[in-house]
Length: 248
Image (cartoon, rainbow, N blue to C red; front, side, top):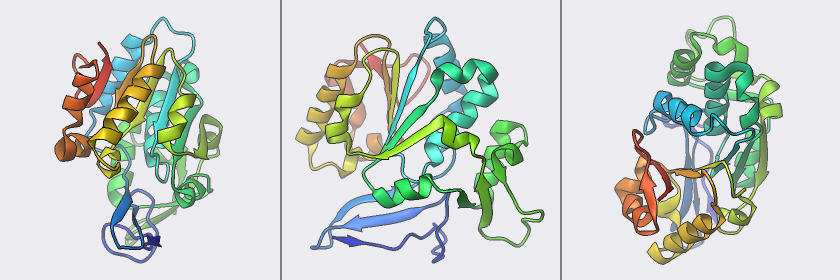
């Protein structure tokens, strides 16, 4: 198996947090999967997602949030930031977020105390926190001139997000059946074929019982039409959100 170095989207040799790009290939050089992440990835309407969560789970005492293929942690941290900013103390019922990835190096990075982010990450985090990024990350006094900004992670994140190595093809068995949102975004095209994808969709659906939803990415829809597979399996689109599907 061949694993390319961690680089950012600017082809810098240093590892970048919000723009991690890491390709894993087999011995024949075929791509197995790729880690590419940013904070608050733009293929999801995060504000509408917040309203959706609020309305869907207003009567639930505990909500289970699972983030599969979490890569370097930028997505579960985005979710954690959103919940705290929108719900304050009311966000307690959503924690901890259970975040997993098949790549042990990515999980090691997610668990670390330090990150590097680019200026896009800083801008989008400030957008969703009303310019309170320094509550969540320790930044240098002056970030001007930095292509990648070295930052420290507020230990608060490691209390709210539990990371571990797992493969969803087996780990779906650990999904809680009630009041669950499963984020499994932008990895479906890397599965072997449509039969493997449909099998996993059905396995996930078999674990869902009451008030559950699955969140995918635009890459999944654009590359392999996951939308149709989910509808065929009995899911329905959320009323005012793209890439979010519920049990029909």
